[in-house]
Length: 508
Image (cartoon, rainbow, N blue to C red; front, side, top):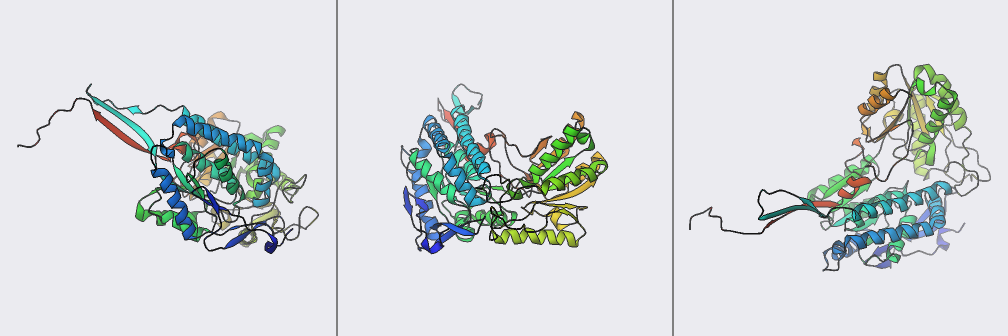
């Protein structure tokens, strides 16, 4: 692999239709998590680059009759569909790039690209099928009153490192469908596929200045976007601490803020779900998927296994046995099921959580360490074994805080009320799951869970047509579905008097 000094710095900042280096000339090496080696060199933007991008987005939004907000809906929808077709065309290349950038397997990367294409098609269909406005009865044939929805304006889109292109698409597709312009700031750790997407938008015919990207860190680029007076909306997906800073920075300009933050998601397993061998195997299999897909670096990961006491010992034993057999390695290698963590710093954070759990009395059933290197698992990569921590309780940091790694904690319950209480005992409220063969119990428990998404006898699927968001400290925004489109619009009441007459409120 090339040394970073041998890599050619690419123009990864795009503003007003042009690719640019950073104003300062600064660059950042993008590292492959599987071996810590640099494979790309991108521009490291700052506040000056951000201002140029916002200026371009503002000009593209405020332009004349041909500006993007005034482009007919059918044309906007057609462009989104062209982008989806280009994503399908480049699926293999983008899936590989996502694997090298974020550490996930190539197969996961391919699935992500499929979901990105689906998101663009969904919002194209949604906006194309909408009614032109909602008529409001004013009680007079001489008054025409209608509520229409117009684009918010310039949108700042700040995306996370774990699902770089998928999370970007959940913001970019509805923003464009609604007629907005935007500046996207991908994570400085994993920017590569978002850079590629901006190129595809230009290839599809999006006018210059509508889509802009600034690669760079959150404390400069992200902070400037959040506070910028010419930004009308900031949509952020990431951690709670950073989301709080974004909201604080946006407050003085009273811009719209959408936050999709973390989760500490319960996976509740009732004994009746395990009454048959098939049911038991399915629940264990899905508990593995819930906790360990993408090495647990998923905001909706089922990191809290809450299992009924009567089946706990068997369930945990089988979960640990199968977790030990997960094949770790470079995401591009054949047969690998799980890749590395995204950075050395993040692995150290996960290790600290496991150490604190063991110090507080948790019992390690498997994992809890770095694996031995082999031909698909370089010693320099940031790998960590899938870890099962048994006999956990709600006072432990590892139970209460988001670990964002391949770590699942086990808690037990005896009654339905106790299961619900445990599942809801979190500051977050993003997602959760219930496993039971009792349809009545399934509906009751799902109805009582304070989480934005509740799966019954499943874990992790999402539908583009369904809103995604959470309760509590999981955020304030909504993505996907009609609500995801609504985030990027403002209602406007247009009241037309068809027969104006004098109204004598005042003498004279």
